Length: 206
Image (cartoon, rainbow, N blue to C red; front, side, top):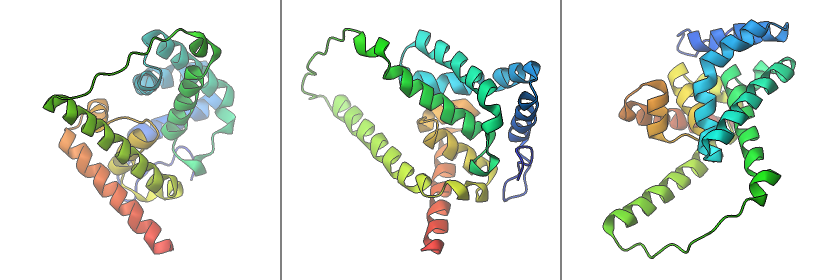
């Protein structure tokens, strides 16, 4: 399947994915206007993913620019058999963001760590449980999706989108809902259905 052939198993045409494929194909020929168009289309997603990792607006802006420079330099290396264009872009974004947090600049910064007070309030305890639940969910999601990367194409476009944003982008349910302008409940149900289908696909292989 080429980068431009982007349909889900439900037959719906993935307009955004199709546009990504067209633009990347033009970038591969050295078309700088196509890079600008891809930037305009995906910069919001890329920036939000990077900011979620580096937690600093200035760093996020710098890494975002680096991501699109990397896309320009590595366009020829894109392999449609390993995922969609947006998955490739998000993977680059997360890798460069993580590299930034590990850089000499970050390691050399003085960080003052204060011991956290014991959480005694009900709201505080609930926040701790919520964060722990999110971490457990990310681990579970990673275990499922990490074993089923090649099966993502069997999901519907909507299901694949939320999986990609959650797994590759590391976004929370609320962040995904905001990113794709979809009700939070719908995002949660799509994600549950997608994970269930991936598990079923894996079980049939066993």
